Image (tube, rainbow, N blue to C red; front, top):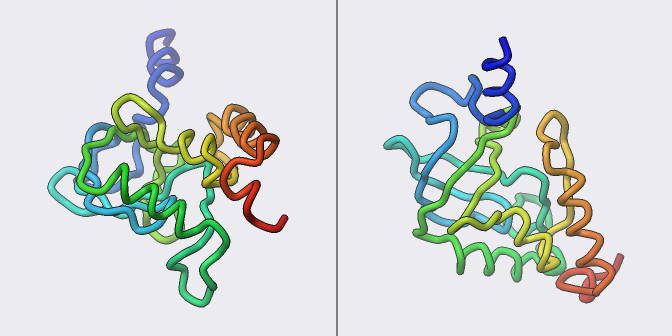
Length: 158
């Protein structure tokens, strides 16, 4: 019993529900950033859309929504650092959203992309349980960026 609990605590991203043929976590290649918080990846021999957990970048491609302040900057950053690159992913407790996208924490070269967006002021936090494991940490990063006027915090109206 202790081993089962330890496995769930230490590796909570390994669960079921991602869908057939999609590894629960691991390596993927980013085909392209769709915008600042959504990626198209290649994993397990297929393409999937991934929504980054815990962050919300200003819109650039959402139908019926105008391009928002700092959206192009967030999108350009994601393209610059992610397009064509290998990444590691940890799926959320809830592995897919209502649109069928994988929900994940994404790491590039050992660094959290989700956290990078918040630190640079390219995103706001977006906490949706049960995918809230890093919510307190992400909130602290957002507060630091806002207090120092980084990114959208210094450029966009409240």
